[in-house]
Amino acid sequence: FTYDSIYDAKSMQIDFYNRECRSLVDSVCSGYNASIFAYGQTYSGKTYTMSGNTNQDELKGVIFNAAEHIFHHIQHKVVKENYALVHVSFIEIYNERIQSLISSSLTERQDNKRVEHFPELRIREAYPDRKIYIDNL
Image 1 (cartoon, one colour):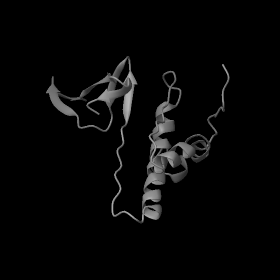
Image 2 (cartoon, helix red, strand yellow):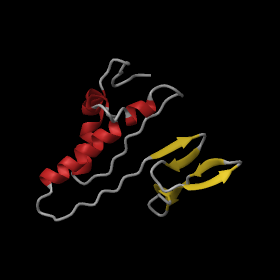
Image 3 (cartoon, one colour):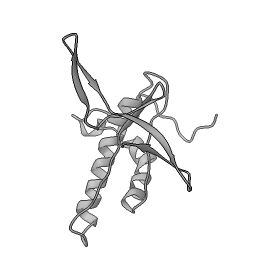
């Protein structure tokens, strides 16, 4: 394998965001679609990289830095329009199952315990252009 870059435990969240994600979010602000995803083995730091610690600015993860970046762009650059439309998805793929982490969940009680169920999502392919999308997202 060859890697574009490697970050260790001493790396700062904002440095990672600026080097690896900022250009993607800039393209989103120009009207393109983009995806940022974390992939790796269990306990390798995916959740921390994406979410971070929201109580300290320098420890905020990719999601929070991207949101701030997008809304800063809207506030300072989108002056001709009176509105901006932002559509965000936050999904998890685990054991070949896809679930939305920001979608409304269904809650029920089982054996006096609260159990949350997220709507099941499925990957679909649209014909004739063969575009891939996630249904119900």
